[in-house]
Length: 145
Image 1 (tube, rainbow, N blue to C red):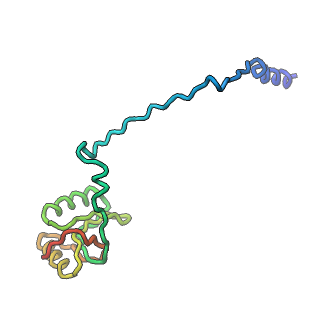
Image 2: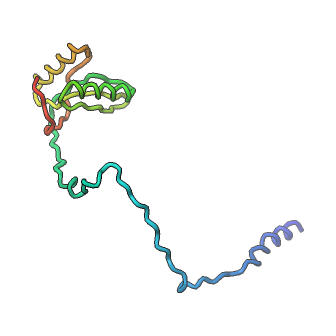
Image 3: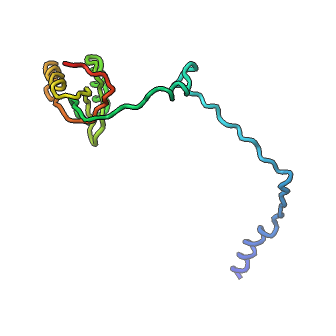
């Protein structure tokens, strides 16, 4: 008896609903309102065509860099990189190699230039500065020490 009452209560709402027939001839799609994209990075004088015309190809080759610091904290690495950019005209990089952020300076094709920078860093108090082989950007400006 309980099952019969349950089934009746279950199917009665389904049977009392009206069936609506939709006439697809009168239903129209509404044109979407697309969002306005505002580019805060580029000002109005810089066009995308100009940016695409710039030569962004950099050749990568084997060379040397001087590593100044390895730390787990990005803030420390980034603040040291800002200081190093102030003192040196060479490129300064913050590379992440798990679990450390590493501050590296220079794009040197010969080891002698890297050794000169290392000696200068040791004189500044960065005694743990050491030279490593790395892939370098050969278009980057280099300072001979």
